[in-house]
Length: 540
Length: 82
Image 1 (cartoon, rainbow over the protein chains, first blue to last red):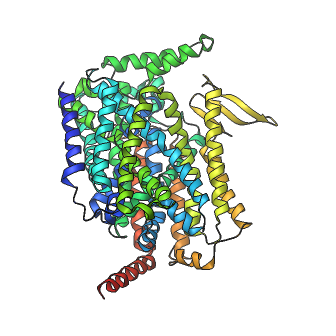
Image 2 (cartoon, each protein chain N blue to C red; image 1 turned 120 degrees about the vertical axis):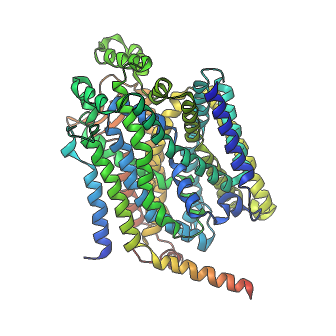
Image 3 (cartoon, rainbow over the protein chains, first blue to last red; image 1 turned 90 degrees about the vertical axis):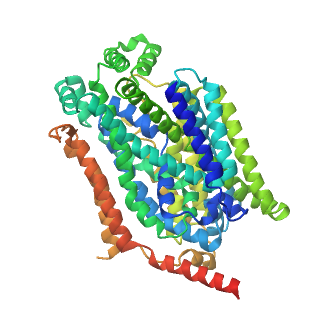
């Protein structure tokens, strides 16, 4: 009961921050609602940008992944993001901000249309970005329902939890716009940052320190490999470096780049970003690994038993038994179980609030979708001129309600696996579109046809991979799907699909870059006047 | 060598250092008695990346672009006043 009350109080605080405390808009225009009047200060910009990139996976998924795979989780997802995201923010962020300031852009699609003198190809890019973003919003509503139900021990039903989270997010995005969303994200990031440190200290004290736990893991043959990354094939480990390329292409991140008051605010943001990643991921990954030694926690002992049974499973037992054991051995809730066992009850409430904070990262995605719709469709096709800016903002607000409501209805009816799959490949899709962003900003010779080729290629490969995963169910051991001259080109694995041992994101991104270059080289470039507007500076 | 090439190489070096095959199957020593060496390595890498970002900000910040925006903003606001 106490954790539920803490979480409800947290939702109240979030609503207050989003709607009332920071609804200090200086105007009623579109720029004020969608971009906070391009006026966010340094601290809010850094913390909110970082929080926007954190999802439910950061806390629960990272610990769960580390529980099953060991310390490799940190290298796969944390230190790779710590390098790629700040570098891409450094290269792209200030340029996007400057072009937005100079030419009034509010979305990346507006820039693409202007940069390559194209209308309909911009619309194609908008459709692609929007389709890739929608599953994240649905997943967030589902996560809200599941999390509240779990935290309350079933007291709050799934449909009510999902609805409550959807209404809270919708309310502060509706009223507070970008300013409210940014302040809520700032508050949530502070909660994230404090959560990991508090959890590790509390659990460490209760179990009498971690050295004994780690020594016991090292002493056992089955768990010693968790303290290395020998279970992860090198090509797969390399592939993960491509996933964070998606960050700067996400519409909610690229649009957020336009909200800074000054260009110099990117400086501290890119320097502190790796430190923030370290502060959040290290405790979660470490606790996930250490959980393997906490066999006195009944729920964790049951997971370890299921893992042992999985290792000894006769593959002829069928995929049903396999899936059942995989579910029982999954570690997404290990932190929750550890805190239940070792930490005081208020800590479980704080954890619940932290999980909801991660789940509610959908706020910026809903707002980004609304911004893109009103700017790239409503305004672009003449409705802003006809009905005025006030109607545009009203349309944006109605769109927020619509998107959240539709996401809620779908979340109630759809099986969770479908959207898990969709987000898995949406990451690859966004990463494969990075050549569009880089070419627009850094290559005079790029053309709209190159951008269209990348968009179509990305759409085709995301759909093909998703269909393949549905048609060929996850096997117990890797199964070749396409072999050529004795070489296994495409392989269906228990966790996904491999292309020559790499994740699909690697060939998708490399071929995207080649398409951007090849198609642009043989098609007509925009006018010199347009190109000149985009290359004011030659620095780096 | 041009500054931008040197800095680009530094980014690539950290990219390469991320693929620490030399610690792939090594757990010992446990730093501070409980942190496997492979994990400590990636923590150190994160700190080195923060250092690299400081260097990029210090030596490769697009100053001309920043000035261009300031000039345009200044002339726009003085135009509004007059």
